[in-house]
Amino acid sequence: MPDWLITGCSQLLTLRGAAPRRGQALGDPGIIRDGALFVHGDQIAAVGPRRRIEKLRGARRAEKLDLGGRVVLPGFVDSHTHLIFPASRAAEHQQRIAGATYEQIARAGGGIRSTVQRLRRTPDEKLKIRAFANLHDFSAHGTTTLEAKSGYGLDWKSERKTLQLLHELHQEQPLDIAATFLGAHVVPPEYRKRPEAYVDLVARRWIPTVATAGLAEFCDVFCDRGAFTVAQARRILAAGRACGLVPRIHAEQLARTGAARLAIELHAASADHLEKINASDVGALALSNVVCTLLPGCCFHLGLAHYAPARELIEAGAIVGLATDFNPGTSPTVSMPMILSLACTQMRMTPAEAIAAATINPAYSLRCHDRVGSLEVGKYADLAAFDVDDYREIPYYFGVNLCGLTMKRGTVIHSKNR
Ligand code: NIG
Ligand code: FE
Image (cartoon, rainbow, N blue to C red; front, side, top):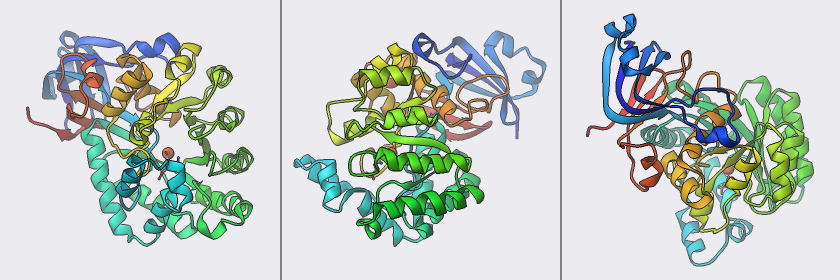
């Protein structure tokens, strides 16, 4: 593996400094103009103004990579994806265009349950090929680390298969994947009349097995109307935590249930969605270390006007993050740049805030902020270079992929000729 001297960064957004970021600090990307990086092996050995970095002894001997004036950021950390699924649900999209709601479709047997039925009969190899292609597209949009959930199996064989696939994918392609066990996505059809028995099965049997086998780092619950109650989510996440699985939670997307308060109570790493929180939830979240992971791709794809209250959260001092929520039902996108555009136009986050919320804060929520999420000495050389003159153009342009180069741990994994 060669060492690299990377120059030609018109703006180098380092995101250096204390993590996670809240309030005013969210808006300071730590920009170096005409910046450079010296990469040794898989790590950043030096970062700063080009004139200083190119004089370093090791840098002079290193392979030269001139980015020609691109804007350089830490690779995106996408902290909420449902990577493994068998097929799109484009027919449901069309039903919604005609007026049906997400919940109506789910109650009629579509939604998550339809993906579950299909995944159970899909061969592993097919799931893997689809996920590989998707991971390639994630990296082409500047993502270098992602979280991925199970939750479309909902029987032991298919949940285990999903988590094992995530493990294999982590080994076989360049992106880092953190696995989350989402056995409590919805109550599967077999348990429709006995939801408590399913909660029991997840909490008492599956979670200890997942934890002992090292199949996941995190545990998640879809705690919402039509899925699991706060009491059920508490049982499952507490069981997970007792086994060392860090809690995350799908909270307050469809209805205000109290799931955000549960996240605080359980010291969850992240509470995701939060469209339906009120002012007092905002205040409580701001006093906690729970990352408020906002998923504007869902509102966009579902055609909803009401986005999560990003400005209120930021101004109150909460830790705000952004993620794609890549999934076939509510957010079929791999593009963090698109999420940045939505965060800016629909939630009034500034471009700088959105970038911090897509890098260092989600890294904190995945407990890997000592390795990724900013461009600092000792961290992995994970970066994305954009074909723009100013970082604010990244969310400004939309529907076009301007990511010109992605590097993961010192290896170029995506490069577009200009
Ligand atoms: O984050 N809300 C639960 N999970 C996904 C939707 C999954 C699906 O519809 O397939 C979400 O929006
Ligand atoms: Fe989700």
